[in-house]
Structures are given as structure tokens and as C-alpha cells.
Image (cartoon, rainbow over all chains, first blue to last red):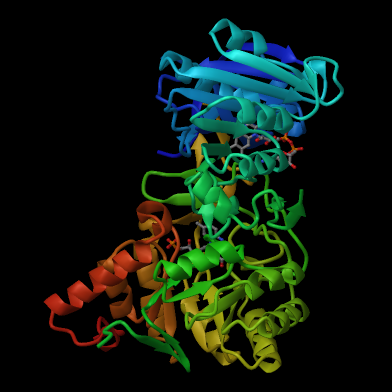
Length: 259
Length: 302
Ligand SMILES: Cc1cc2nc3c(=O)[nH]c(=O)nc-3n(C[C@H](O)[C@H](O)[C@H](O)COP(=O)(O)OP(=O)(O)OC[C@H]3O[C@@H](n4cnc5c(N)ncnc54)[C@H](O)[C@@H]3O)c2cc1C
Ligand SMILES: Cc1cc2nc3c(=O)[nH]c(=O)nc-3n(C[C@H](O)[C@H](O)[C@H](O)COP(=O)(O)O)c2cc1C
Ligand code: FES
């Protein structure tokens, strides 16, 4: 039944500047790339990707942006939230070597996919790109599990100065990969798509969501593809067909907002 | 021969399954996908004068036998909507522009703009159960409704449908007022006022607390409404509410509907539900030796 299940928060942790993780009890299966609708009673209900998966608990990781994420960050252990889902499809993780490109908070939802790749003994490289050093998170976690982690910052405060997509382009020219998996600003992902024409390419998109079950039409992209059902992860073939990918999104009223 | 062909006034529908307002009808891409998936017609999301973000989430929850929503009429406003309609693929599938307003002036303004965007008919949403000032406040007052229907009719050249709410004492009286106002067809029903409380948290789930119930649970209410309306008005009725399979369509047609609208079944049976339901109707007609669906309109009235 698609209605919120009430669950208690097991832990809450600050990951970086303005970035928090919340873990809660949920024994259901969820695939890397899938998401929950998180209900913060009295505030809002918002989509959040899973950022860590165990049999009994799941985690979400988010940046404080507005009311809902501010309220989430101020919750405590044992506070109750509602969760529905898991929703959407997930990443397909296959091949001998994969490149993950996470821009901003995008690395949050890539992390469980990276971990699944490592469990499958896939050679895994991760690029984490942020504006500045204080926004970097999950680099230690992924490095410790055996991923090759590279960092870019816009201001050069850590790692290579520049955009994650530019570093990805350089690496793709030098090394062999079977696929690229990405989540981050849409413009970044669109740039990346143009240099991945010969590769398996999967990108996770964000759109304003209300029902999350494919009926309200709020989250549609291209010819009526529902990011909540047919996405949020789309492959190269689909992305190329979306005339609006990287061009505009829509606000809560359905009005177009150019990137 | 196409057993399912349906006519409402001069408008011809290849089959009687029309996408209901508010489901996948907010942007051109979605509407194109629904047309391609076999709907006989589509109704756009209800559009108002200015953009509306709708209510905060949660706006949707699934219940045991139906769906509960309080979207709060989110829409980009009539001016931005012209772009969406321009981008619709050219087809024979009739497009019905749904509008909501607070008074005659707003309805006239919206209807004229919709007509200029080349829709085939207008649907007046006077029945949203959870939008303050708009919706039900217009649709439960027969005098006001007749006045608004008449005003819109005078100002456009395309057919005008009026969509009614079951949340009134006598839906037949309201339908009759719409007919007197010059409506070309009645659409019945919109969602039924309802509520869900989460007992764990001791609070309503929907941010708006009260919402509109749709899907299987409301079918008997819809069938009753169509039946009652059919006893009172001469104009065609488009049935809606809980239609999920071919037999549901047949039932509504027997109650007096000429065509039907389908909303929640997109959730229950996915986007190709229109094709599935049409196939089920055709099979039923074949098995029961009925030549045309239209022969069954209103047969349950004896
Ligand atoms: C499938 C999916 C997975 C996501 N996963 C994550 C994640 O793992 N970590 C993370 O930090 N963020 C994630 N987001 C984005 C996150 O949902 C929004 O940033 C969040 O809703 C902001 O809410 P707010 O009230 O704090 O901000 P607001 O001030 O309300 O809004 C800020 C911006 O957030 C977006 N937003 C607000 N409400 C919604 C909504 N209902 N649906 C979609 N976008 C909304 C809008 O773009 C808005 O402009 C995801 C979004 C989607 C669609
Ligand atoms: C998510 C959702 C949004 C809706 N939005 C509108 C709307 O904008 N305008 C309208 O006239 N009806 C709206 N409705 C009502 C439907 O058009 C339809 O009348 C109702 O759901 C009953 O049909 P069903 O049981 O087939 O869904 C909405 C229904 C749902 C479920
Ligand atoms: S959020 Fe409603 S269709 Fe995707």
C-alpha cells in the first residue's frame, strides 16, 4: 500500500557543511538508485534517494536547502518520520570497470551503487566534484571500501581545480571503462553524456514529485516519461530522446524553469 | 467496424475512454504519451488564471480501495499553458481543456483563451472538493452554475462540458441547472470528499487534511450519479469514477453515460489502460452479441 509507514530515526550524523545523514529502520529491499518519499509530519513530504543499505536499516543523505531539509536536519534519534517506497528503478551495475561521477550531493545516491559494484569485484573509479572542500563527503567511506576516489573542487581548495565532468572527460580518453554512472546537476550530466556516446551511460534525474507513483504527472520529462516510475535512473537511449534534458525543469505549479 | 465509436454532439471519439483531468495532463509530453496509448480523448489538467503551486506534500495517499489526493489544483496558469497545447502532436483525438475559476469573468477569460489554443471542447471544473473559493463552491450552487455555464456558452463556439461533484444533496438538480445554462454535456463525477488519519502519529496524512477519494471505491457512487442525472437531463453524460476495466465502462453506459473518463486506473493498470479497457469492451460486446456500444446507453432505465 502506497502510504507512509511510520519509522523511528536510529541515528543522525553531520557529513559535511550543510550535509546530514539520517538512518532509520526499514527491512524492505531497496536497490541503489531507488528513492523514498520522506514525510516530515507537519512540514512536507520529499523524495530522497537511499544512501546506504543494510538488511535492517536504510539511510538518506541530504543538503539543507529549504523548510523540509532544515526540519529533517533538526530531528533526533527516536523521532518519527513516515516513509513510502522504495520507488523508481535503480542502477544496472555490470561490466569490468565502471566510472562514477557525482556532482554535489549526487554522490549520496551513488554510494550504495559504488558499494554494489565493489561487491561484484568491478574495478571502480569515483569522481566527487563539489564547489569547495567543506562540501566533500563519502570520500573516505568509498576509498576504504576499495574504490579509486578522485576529487575536483570548483575553487581548487582540494583535489583538482575544475568540474567533475572535465576530469571525467580526461580519464575517459586515457582509460577503458564499460560504463559511466552519474548523478549531479543536470547540465553536468548532459555534458557528460556527449563524451560517453560509446559507453553504457546511466544518469539519475531529479524532478518535482508529488504522488511518486506515476499518476499526477508532475515529474514528467520528454514524451511523458515519469521520473518517479520510469526513472529516476535513465539510460543513454532514453536521455537522448528527452528534448528537455538539461534544458528546463518544472516547479511545483508545472511552470518551466530553465537551468 | 468500430463498435466503440462515440459521439458527443459533433465531436467524434474513436473510443469512449477519455483521460480524466488531473492525471498526466499538465504537459505536452504526457498528453502525447496518453494519446499514443490509445485514449479516445483527453482532458487537460484544470487550468486557472494564474499559476498555482497547489498544496504542500503529502498530496497523495493510497487507501484500501481507492486513492486519496489533495493536489490543490497545481497548474502553470492559462498563459503558460498555450505552449503545452501548441506542442501536442496533431491527431484526431479530441482535446478537452479543463478550466476552473472563481466567477463568470474568470471562466469566460479562461474559456476564450482555451478556444484560441484550438482545444475541441471546454470542461468546467466546478467540482474540486478541496480548493477553497474554486470548485465546489461554484458547483453546489445551481443559480451560480447556470449563470457561469451560460456566460461561457455565450463566449465560445466550441462545446462546453460541466463536471460535477457528488458532494451535493442532489446532483440531478445541479445537472439540470447546467443543462439550462446551455451545457453540451455533463461529466460526473469528480472525487468524493474523504480523509485519512495516520493513527500512529494521530494526525491526517494529507497536508490539506481533507482530499478527494477516487478509484474503485467510488464506482457505485458514480454509477448512481449518472443514473440520477440521466433521468433528469437530455444532454449526453460522460461517466467517471472508479472505472478500471471494460465491464465498468459497460455499467456506466447502461446507467446512461455516452462516454467515460478514466483517472485512477492509470495507477492500477498503467498507461496502456485505455487500450486494455477498449479490448475488454469489444470482447464483452462480441460475447453478448451487441453490435455497437452506443446501443447500450441508458438501457438500465426501465
Ligand atoms: C528522486 C529524487 C531523489 C532525491 N534524492 C536526494 C538526495 O539523496 N539528497 C538530497 O539532498 N536531495 C535529494 N533530492 C532533492 C530533494 O528532494 C529536494 O532538494 C528537497 O525536496 C528540498 O526540499 P526543501 O523543502 O528543503 O526545499 P524547498 O525550499 O522546498 O525547495 C528547494 C528545491 O528543492 C526541490 N524540491 C522541493 N520539494 C520537492 C519535491 N517534492 N520533489 C522534488 N524536488 C523538490 C525544488 O527543486 C526546489 O526548488 C532528490 C530528489 C528527487 C526527485
Ligand atoms: C491525482 C488526481 C488529480 C486530479 N485533478 C483533477 C483536476 O485538476 N480537475 C478535475 O476536474 N478533476 C481532477 N481529478 C478528478 C478526476 O478527474 C476524476 O474525476 C476522479 O478521479 C474520478 O475518476 P477515477 O476514479 O477514474 O480516478 C483528479 C484526480 C486525481 C486522482
Ligand atoms: S510524482 Fe506524480 S507522476 Fe511522478
